[in-house]
Image 1 (cartoon, rainbow, N blue to C red):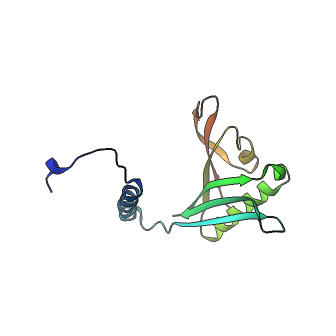
Image 2: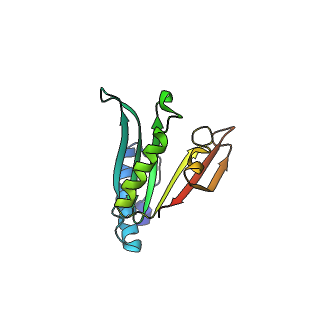
Image 3: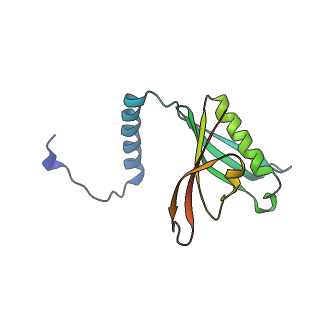
Length: 142
């Protein structure tokens, strides 16, 4: 392959490019650190009609769990369901062999909530979004 034939441009085929980048990155990471055994999971709160009123989406890889998303219907906030959802997500992670959990949130979302559950801040970006902070937290499961 000649580098003179390569070109860099914004790609309108985002999904195709993303698949190729993920495939290459997963192969490289596995060669360096071994298979991640990445697996996604979800835990939800549902009403009697089966309507989802909140949930956690996460994934486990190597010996970590990443909490991708947590949402709870506003009417259920402050009732303990958020704490219960996180406890269930941590239990799923531990059952899969995870020893640690990490996540990120915005200061207007979960600031303080996760610390009450034993998470510690390890990174923060100010003014993201403007007037707020983006916060990264982690917790050891033991």
